[in-house]
Image (cartoon, rainbow, N blue to C red; front, side, top):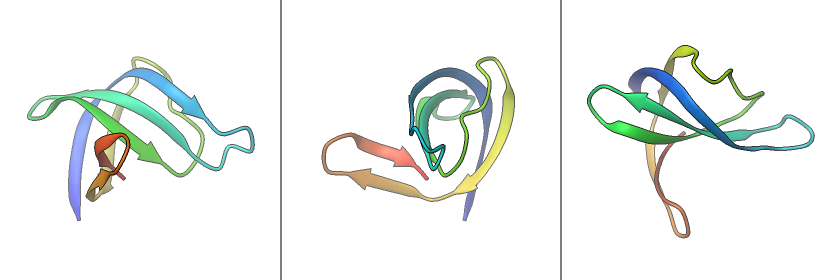
Length: 65
């Protein structure tokens, strides 16, 4: 499991049932990074720490889940 730290730049999608969201963070080592998260989206500008794995989505490319 890997850890990312960054500031939330934008929220791209929030499922109506709040089951998952997609957002981007500005992460020091990776730059702008797409995140897929099971839950409610964080606030834009919020500093967050995430634990997960890198995946390659067929349509959307490299993502951190």
